[in-house]
Amino acid sequence: MRFVVPRLGFALIDRQHARLAADVRVLQVAVKHGRPARSALGRLIRDTRRHFATEDRLMRLVGYADEAGHRALHEGVMSEMLRMRAMLATGKTLHPRHAEQIFEWLLHHTAEADRNLVGRLARR
Image 1 (tube, rainbow, N blue to C red):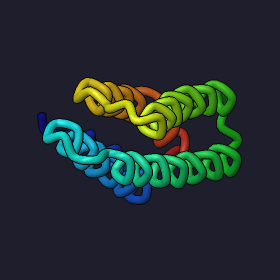
Image 2: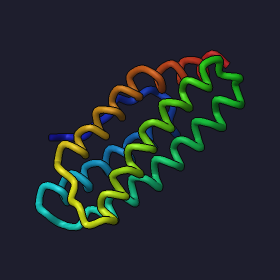
Image 3: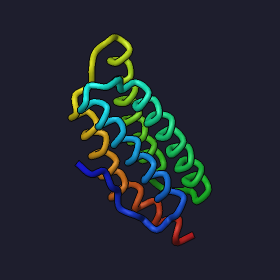
């Protein structure tokens, strides 16, 4: 599966989305080939936190009306990634579907929530 997210026309967010898609791909390859996934997931978590921090700053900057809802989406996916990290810490393995679920979340989040945020940024 190819992990590519749509470009939204806001360079910083587009670069971060591309980085997250690459992180998901590395995680997916590791899981698929039975390699340790802990560092790949750790990198994805780190880059996701950076991306969310960027979006949080931008939402505050423009007084984004749905900031609370957008942050709730962030918290949900971060909770899921941390749950996966806890699974790995106990010796369990991830299924390839885990990486696909994260990517599906990223696609959905980009196509809807982030598109709305970028639209608000463009109007500012």
